[in-house]
Length: 62
Image 1: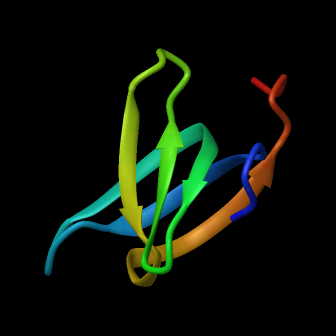
Image 2 (image 1 turned 45 degrees about the vertical axis):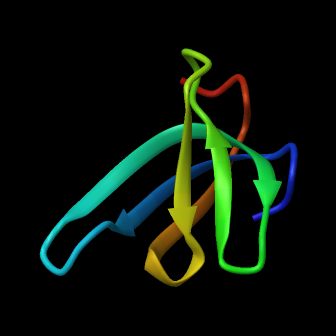
C-alpha cells in the first residue's frame, strides 16, 4: 500500500475471520501495519501479514 492511494482490501483478523474494506485510503504505514481511513472518516488498523487480497481503485469509482 502507498500513502494517499485508495484500495479494496480483503484481510484476516483472526484464525477463521475474513473482513473486507472497500475504498479505503492509506494514511499511515508502519513496519507491521497500515492505518486506513474509511469514507465516513473513521480509521482502522490492518496488519500487513493479514492482507489476503489488495486492489488499487479510483477514488471516484462506484
